[in-house]
Amino acid sequence: MRGKLLLGIIFSIVFITATKNADAQGRIELSGWGGHMVSGDIGFYEGDFTIDGNTTFGGALGFEIAKNTLVELTFSNTATNAHFFPHVSGYLPWNGKIGINYLMIGSVKEFYFGESPVVPYFGGELGTSITNVKESTVSDLWRFSIALKGGLKIFLSDAIGIKLQARMLMPLYFAGVGFYGGIGTGGSSAGLSLNGGVVVLQGDFTAGLVFRFNK
Image (cartoon, rainbow, N blue to C red; front, side, top):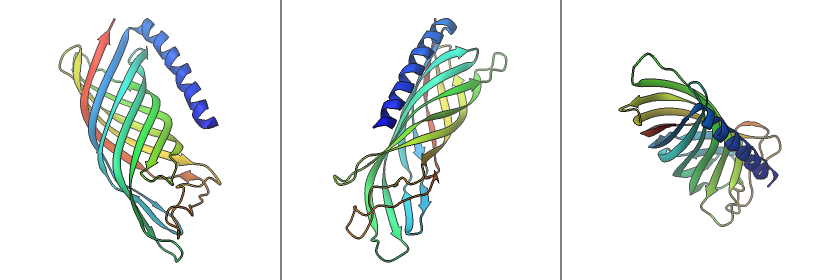
């Protein structure tokens, strides 16, 4: 609960600051996209936890805070399946549906080349991943996450363009924190304990539209 409250405060402060700076710089961007999230795999002593790749959707709201630099608030959602393949006795195989949501904030640096309508960009994000297991006995899993992203904006006019993007997403866990909430001999009740590091590397490749508003 403290983590969710702290994240909410950080988002609120950055949102207010970005909005004020956007007034000074004079540009706001709104984008939406769809694409594919690649599969991910986590190896434990007890077994392997695999997340299938599937369709992903998302959007971003960007505020210019400096020349060719934006702060972006992003959200994405992927509905997919997950599987647990045990390596040792005492654990049963598990298959189920999960939803993965990313709520992130970050900065984006754009690179303009004369009058070219093609604008490469690169950026980083931090925020939270929310994994929703479609079982009543398993609570949602919130984890601090970081991401790297890059792509191209191809502007068809001053106001609208095509956005092509790739991201590498890294949900993190901390020492002594259980990852899943329960895979074991009793179905979804035993749980797995981790030591620290990156839970799973995920990535998505998306395409969509970007709308630019200049004041």
